[in-house]
Image 1 (cartoon, rainbow, N blue to C red):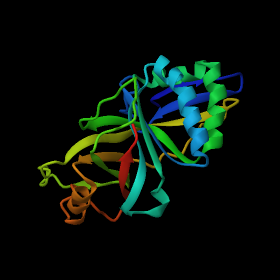
Image 2 (cartoon, rainbow, N blue to C red):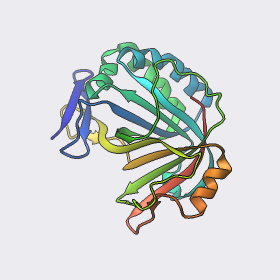
Image 3 (cartoon, rainbow, N blue to C red):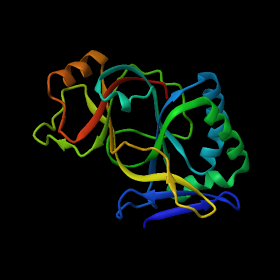
Image 4 (cartoon, one colour):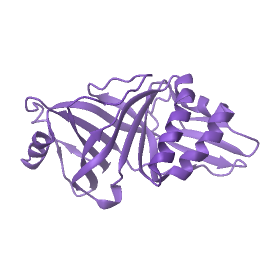
Length: 235
């Protein structure tokens, strides 16, 4: 089994487990945080307090956004906030748990969010850049996020995107995060995202039209659940 672990205390360990045997846990990993908030104010406080610890282990913010509109999808996949953070490796992420103050501050996250989906993807493409100095997004681009659960079919005949639309981020599932107590069986946290794509466009109407005109490069199949959302970028 392809796995990295860190023992928090005498009873509890955190584990990162590859979703397939070929998952490379020593390469850069992109943490997908897809969740609803119970308290936006408390979550923002957690983010401010936790980021110095993320930076210390080499973590960098790639994207943060809030869902503006649901274009399509299974309601069970829907969340309101997306945060993507790049870590240098699985060991880099596990380094967070060696910081006692981070563990303490993480209690705020538990109180601030609900329906939390978390896991790692590998980067398969896109133009997104990461930064250790995240700033409020002041640009004028619009973003469409496509979340897929299950096997999907990509339409390779349609690789030329309309002018003004580009692939910002393409991540494919590579690892789960779980924990165990007293060396019992590992319980992975919920992570139903098999692939996540973010498309960047000049405006939301252009992205909606592209999707609705059946030019979208991922086609619906019978064994797939998916959600497609317009998202306002925050970071």
